[in-house]
Image 1: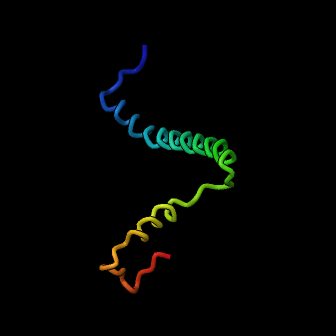
Image 2 (image 1 turned 30 degrees about the vertical axis):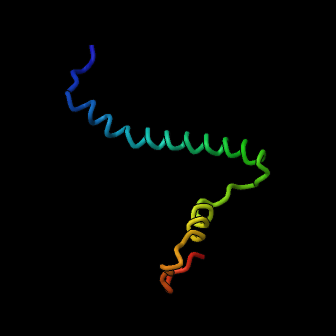
Image 3 (image 1 turned 90 degrees about the vertical axis):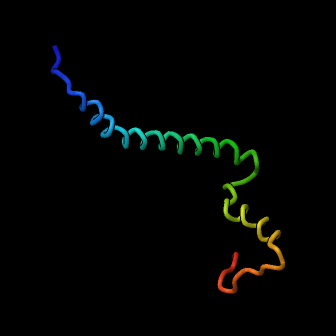
Length: 77
């Protein structure tokens, strides 16, 4: 028969394995995203995806109200 197990053994095992499982999960997600990009980007005729910051900030600057000019020390570019 096996050794008697304490109640805390399962919790300790979970604490030990959680970072390893999370690392594997993230690796699987990143691999899947890379495969997806490899399939989609050639169909769109792009070598690489556009940067998210350039896409997200461009409309915001066009809609910036004229009454509130941005600070002189900060530039969007």
